Structure formats: C-alpha cells, structure tokens
Image 1 (spheres, rainbow, N blue to C red):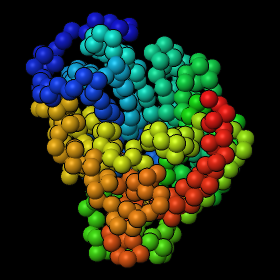
Image 2 (image 1 turned 180 degrees about the vertical axis):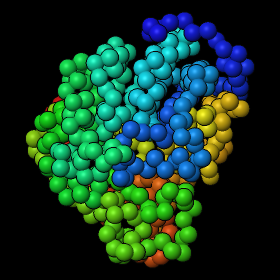
Image 3 (image 1 turned 180 degrees about the horizontal axis):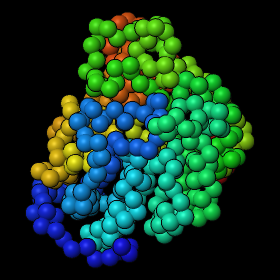
Image 4 (image 1 turned 45 degrees about the vertical axis):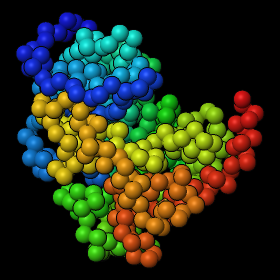
Length: 429
Ligand code: SF4
Ligand code: SF4
C-alpha cells in the first residue's frame, strides 16, 4: 500500500461511539497520550526484566494478538477527535510494535491523514528493540517523521545481561546494526536505557557508551523496579501489612525475602548512577547532550514545571491502549483493576477524562505518606511513580516509593548545583 492512500471508512468506524466531552473555555485544550500496543505483549525478544511479556497470561491474550484494521481506524478517529489542541502525538509500543509489519504503519499514516483536523499537527513515535529495523523501515520512519525510542542498556556486556531472544541469543549486535541504520537514514531517535541491578554499578561506562557510540538525540534512563509478585498483583493492591520498611534487607534486591526481583535496581544504586552521570554531564556535556531526567529536574528547579509524569504532582495523561481496544490508566497499570473501558463501546476521549481516570491522576499526590509530604524534595519528586510505592516509611506508614533513598541522593546532587545552573541559564538568555 502507498502512504496516504484513501482508506474506505468501514461500517465499524462510522458506527463507533461518539464523544460527549463538554467544550472547554477558550485557550484550554483536551490533550492526553495513549501508548498503543498493536501486537499486545508479543515480542521477538525475551528480556528478563520485561514487565509486559506476562500480560499474555494476566489479560488472557491470544498467542498472536494483533490490532484489527477496524479497531485501528476507531482509535485514530477517536484519538484525533478527542484532542482539541494544535498537535496530536501517537505512540506505538509493545510488546514489539514492528511485529505488525510496515503495511500496518502505512495504514496508520493514511488514516491519520484522513481524520486530521485542519491546522492540527500529527506526530508519531515508535518504541522498539530495533531487531526488525531495516532499510525499508528506516526509509518509512524518516519519510513520515517518526521519532524512534530504541531500547539499549549500555555496551555489549551490560546490554546482553538481560536483553536476549527466546533462544537465549544476545541482541546487542542487532541493536547496534539498527543504530547504524537509523544514523544512515537520519531518523531521529532516543535511547531508552533500563537501569538494572548490573548496569547501575557502571554509570559512566553506560553514559559514555550511549553518548559516544550510540549518539541519540535524547537519553532516557528508566529504573527497573519490579515487585516479585508483579505478574499477578496490581500496583496499589499490595498487602500493606507485609510491605517492608525503608532501609530493610527486604527492600533491596538480592536477599532471599526481597520484595523485588533480582534484576531490579537497588535504590542507592539509582541515586549513585544518576549522580555520577550528572557530574560528568554538568562538567562536560551541559547544553550538548539531552538527558531527560536532568532537563526535567532543571525545568522544575527553575519554575518551568515537570516534563515527566513521574515527577509531576498529578499524572494520568499517559494511558495504554491494548490491541483489542481495552484502555488502561497507564502503561504500568495494565491490570484488570485499572481498565477504564473499551473504545469500541465508549469513546476514547470520554474514557481518558472519566471520573475513574481523574481519581487515578490525583491519587499520585493525594495518597502520599506523611514522610513524603514533609520531604524537602517534595516539589521535585511527588513520590515518583505510584507503581513503585511498596515500602513503609520509618514510622510504619505504607505507600513510600522503593527508590526514595536514591531519589534523595539525586535531588541533593541536583539542588546543590542550583547557583551554578542559575549562572549558566542566565548567561544563555
Ligand atoms: S502511574 Fe507512573 S508512569 Fe503512569 S502516568 Fe503516573 S507517574 Fe507516570
Ligand atoms: S524523595 Fe522520598 S520522601 Fe521525598 S518525596 Fe520522593 S519518595 Fe517521598
């Protein structure tokens, strides 16, 4: 199929649910973000730490889940219809979205062209492990201005620790081939680096490798935090009596009774990792290398607000759409307890701004323990992501973030550079 071909509107699209959101005052917009999983949890890798592969069992997905053309058209129509601002960002994720094949994404572009409102800009991003990227994919991504998020955890010895295919074959060489192709075709891409128990010990090796060998536009570090029972127990539904205290052996990876998987990053290591990279970045790369955690904290420190949901006071604007039309509160909350509905029955915009989702959004700050409310870094942290709040505070209150110790280390480091940052920001104005 050629891009931008006219797609006949199927009866399913014409018959889909309609939108009931009230209009907003002038200057206010309806805007949200849905991460779409067109192939469900299906992936061509079998990474040890993947939090999504197990959804096949939890959500009783078929072995080969694929988003139908009718559902794709519904999503694109409803998503564009619900957005009232000047831009709409589509995010394609998995599992591994490239398993859908190029035809699927050519249809995406054609449908977006069909439903786009006048004056509205449409953007696409694609999160991938890079394994299937070839010349044809890269030409397509470049031509259609996709921003790619490529998963890579550092040099070979660190990347291949947890990222391999189902037969146990390491993936590093294939990912680096994708890096070369992305550069060759000048496809803009960011590096998504999962910081786990192993690579967290080698921050400068990871950072220098990404900066000098991978050379992405953006570096994003994602802490690997997985409760041992995450396959079955939804975040926030833990047995609060059994949550470990901050600083206890149970609250760190590696002990026999740890509440997290063996490959989860230790909280102190997360702080150490970010702190060591911050030092090098500030000394050498400030203004040249874009590390999203660092840009985010500087934005917050100087009154421009959080750019990342995890450090916002409220969240709830990053939903997850499964291949069958089920919409969930967040990519990390794809559990039956957090299902908002199905877009074949209720319009995606009505689900995204539903009372259930509003409660989810405000719980991020409403549910904080006293320990966080009294924390000097509250305005930068807001308790980080609710998915990781499975510790007890020193006085025994449940709901403290597993990463707290490391978050404090990092915020101490960043705020100690406030005067220097103010000088640099002033000089660059
Ligand atoms: S639950 Fe966590 S990942 Fe999801 S939107 Fe909120 S802060 Fe972000
Ligand atoms: S640093 Fe710790 S105590 Fe402070 S707000 Fe974050 S999670 Fe809460």
